[in-house]
Image 1 (cartoon, helix red, strand yellow):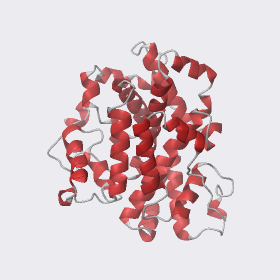
Image 2: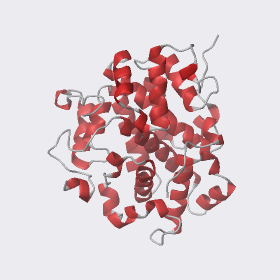
Image 3: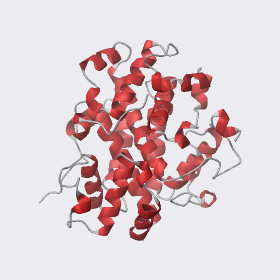
Length: 140
Length: 192
């Protein structure tokens, strides 16, 4: 079975990035070294990317017994980054430090942030999971 | 205290990695603290620094407009760490403190021209409701920018938006790494 490819390579998005060759190359390197490669296992990153994309199977992860405590901590941080930074409190950080080394936290956090930004950008282009909605109420 | 320790940047030996930290100390945006967190993973520090250089400092879109959009994101998602930073290049190009104050009310403000407002409207849609980037907004953008400029602006706003959602969870603060510099800080933060 091939692995799910939430992250890419994604044809239309790459075609758009290719109009800006230097950025396309920087993105390609990021994909190889951080998004798909790196020190945190790819399946966990895929899980976080699916949560950002509001995959219905994951939105109730707190009440599901399908996920272990490491995955739950990663998903809680994903939620805090995308929707509610104040949820990244002492308790969550204790969980994160229990299950991850600091370099893993840096890579995972950067992965979540980078993927969140790409999803929103592609959403403005009618591509990807963020095309359908937003993440809260704009101020002002 | 930061939730992830600052990497001891004085121990960095790789010239490329040292260069990213030295640039942050001299010019800011990004400041050294966020880079010292990323430095735990060289691939992350390199990824961010390259994407940032190419989409923010360089590229086909006006840097000053990208700085306004960066600061709109800061105000909008309340990333104080990022919102207290200023691009020195954008300042030289005329972006002043008064331009920052009315960013959340940019549509009704007479401080911004139609070109700036179109870019800010796109940034607002990207952050808060990507589906609002409809035909009308695209027509508005294309009245002022080429498709390549719009693509670069979107890529950049997406990059800074993601970072500005991540950074508030890290509890990092200014002048906690390489404290010899106040480069790229807003006046209030520089004199704090």
